[in-house]
Length: 384
Image 1 (cartoon, rainbow, N blue to C red):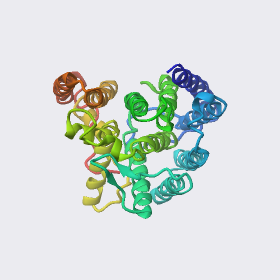
Image 2 (cartoon, rainbow, N blue to C red; image 1 turned 60 degrees about the vertical axis):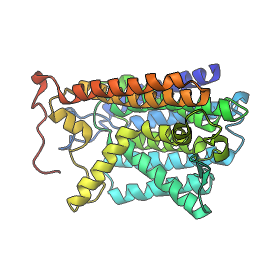
Image 3 (cartoon, one colour; image 1 turned 180 degrees about the vertical axis):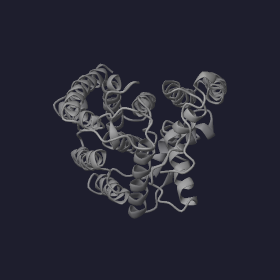
Image 4 (cartoon, rainbow, N blue to C red; image 1 turned 30 degrees about the horizontal axis):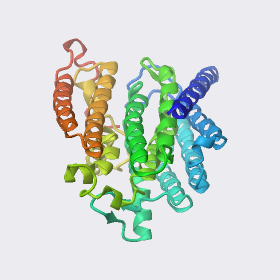
C-alpha cells in the first residue's frame, strides 16, 4: 500500500507543478480560446491543463519501470507501451482541439485509432465477462467490444467537462473507489496485490489530485479535451485490465460469496457505476442530438450540469452534488462487493441503506436549489 501512496503523491506533485507552469505560460502568451456560447465561465481561461496531467502520468509510469514492486505491471510491456502510444495520440489531438476546435469527425477517428492500438498491439481486450462463466466468442468480437467500450468511456468523461473542478473531482472519487475494488480483487483472486488496473487507478488519483487546486472554482486552468479524453481512456483501460480479463470461473456464483446475484454481477457492475453519471449524460446527449437530426458530437448547452445551473444551482453547488452522486453510488456498490467476497451479509444492509438515504438526499439537493441562485443561467432556445 505504501508504494501506491508514494505513486499517487509523486504523480500529484509533478502534475501540480506542471499545471502551474502551463497556467503561467498560457496566460503570458495568451494561449486560450474565446468564450463560446455554451461555456459557463465568463473570463477567457487556458484549456491546456491536459498537458500537465499527461506528463504527470508519464512520469509516474517511468518511475514504476524502475520499481520492483511494480514488476507485474511491466510483465507484459507491450500493454504499457500501447497505452502510452494511445495516450499520446489522444493528448495531441485534444491539444489541437483545445486551441483550434477540430471537426468532431477528426476527433472521433483519433479516438478509434487510439482504442485500436490498445486492443490490437497491446492485446488489452475484454476476453470475458464475469457473469456466470460468460466468455467473448471470438477475437474480432473481443476487439470490437473493447474498442467501442474505450471510445464510449472517453466521450462520456469528456461530455461532463463543463464546470470548474467537475471532471477532476468526479474522476478522483471514481478512481478512489475503483482502486479499492481492484486492490481487493487482485488480493483475493491473484497472487499479488499489484496489478495494471490498480496502478492506473493510483496514477489517475494523483493526476486529478494535483490538477484540482488550479481547476477548483474559480478555475485558473481547464484540462480541456486533452485531459478529459486521457482520463476516460485510462479509466477504461484500468477497468478492462482487471474485469475484462478475469477468469470467469473464479467468480462462479456458487463459490463467490453468499449472494449468487451479487456475486455474479458486482465485478462488472462496479466499473460501470463509477462512471454512471458521465455515461448517463453521454447517452442522453447522443439521443437528444440524433433526434434533432444533428451529429451525436455536435456541442450544445443541455448537459446535466447545464440543466442543474438552469434549475438555480450555483456552479460550485452543482459540482458538489455531482461529487455526492458519484461517491454514494460507487461506495454503495463497493460495500455490497465487500459483503459478497468476505461473506459478510451484514454489509448488504448498510450498503443498501446508504444508497437509498444518500440518493434521496441528493435528489432533494438536486431539485430544491437555493432560490437566490435561480434563473442565473438561462438556457438558450436553440442549441449552438
